[in-house]
Image 1 (cartoon, rainbow, N blue to C red):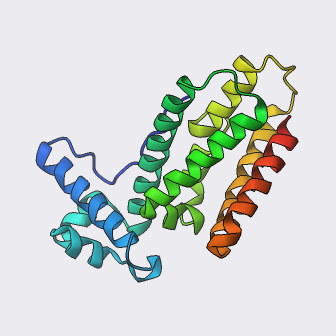
Image 2: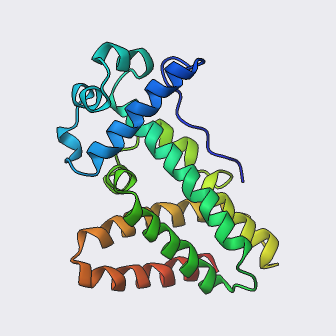
Length: 203
């Protein structure tokens, strides 16, 4: 998604270490719950109890559960972007198909390693406004794909590249979610088709 994704704003900026620690506790508690409890059963009261803070303390920083989910999602997207950039730094001479294989495999591995983000992203539980800020072709992982096309392939850039990247991103999100809905033995086949589809569409 070049530019670093900025976390979704909390209600109040934690300027002191204690306040920042409370925000981290809340994020940590919500992430832990997302790893073991269906999202619809998670409430702000349950997050506060898991974090060991009062509901009032939680509401000093977050207006609702959605703001917490958005904050976790944005942080995870930034983690993935940074890890993907490190991976690509050591991978030279990739053709378009190999590049998409690497990116999608890295994303699937990241989803498997972060059940909190998997629950939010695959269920499309990121708010529309936050998602819009972080799926543009000049932000986050999409920007890495754009830079690969512009800087490393030396291809003629189509005038509608940003639109194509957005369509590829939307299609990729939906098909990865579909892959995770399938039995484990079928998931790999869906993901393999996704790699071919995206590389064929963009290149």
